[in-house]
Picture 1 (cartoon, rainbow, N blue to C red):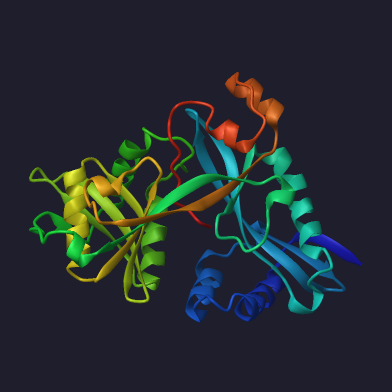
Picture 2 (picture 1 turned 180 degrees about the horizontal axis):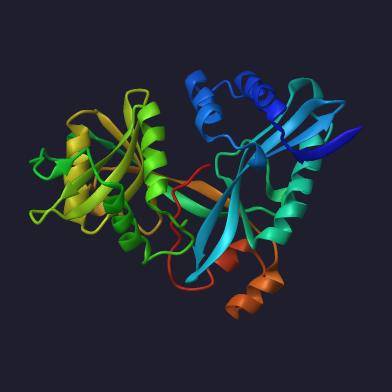
Length: 306
């Protein structure tokens, strides 16, 4: 008999093995790190038949700032069906069951933009976009690295994030524990936070950096002034030939790096679970998740992928 349920402790190593078999683009160590340090059985949904896991996905709960109100949401990721049971509609069944539950728990449900399956049949829409800039060493002048630091207190990163995000909508609420966990994850991926301080010792800008294929992958840039951005980019380019920088659509990096190459990509898909409740809560008419998240003036920002 087939059923959809939360994972139990016995499923963890089975799902880990499936990930190694299916997500072959991922580093073996990255998968093991996820299951050793981040995996939570309560946030893992499995489709089981005769005690065999056929399909699964992960649910990462978050709190989102949505038009000056904190709402519950979640980011779904890690979708897979075992190879020998694909094309039977099992994942469709699993996702429908997951969304039936999420509809009663949250106004919005999210999926990462790099998901390999079509989420539009489940009423997900591309809502969050990012600009991806490629910046080479020759595009930025060499600058003094005074004020650049690699050791940044969690409290300082949090204060900077709270300052920056007050101009945006759709971002996740963070605390100091978030940064403690993220630093651990970054160390595993040969990554780090890099910050620049002013002469008074105040953090002015930070980036979240990972190394991939000998490139600096910067998936988050938070700042108070553009001069600090240039100093950070110059510092990173003193160690790498190329930076791949992800920022929101509100940013225009070409103003400070005119030769930077840019493309636009989907960052997150969103599903509006309860339009009528959203309308009552915010006193606005909406039809889609895009219209809901863009109902007011602030631009969207969200740098999470899982």
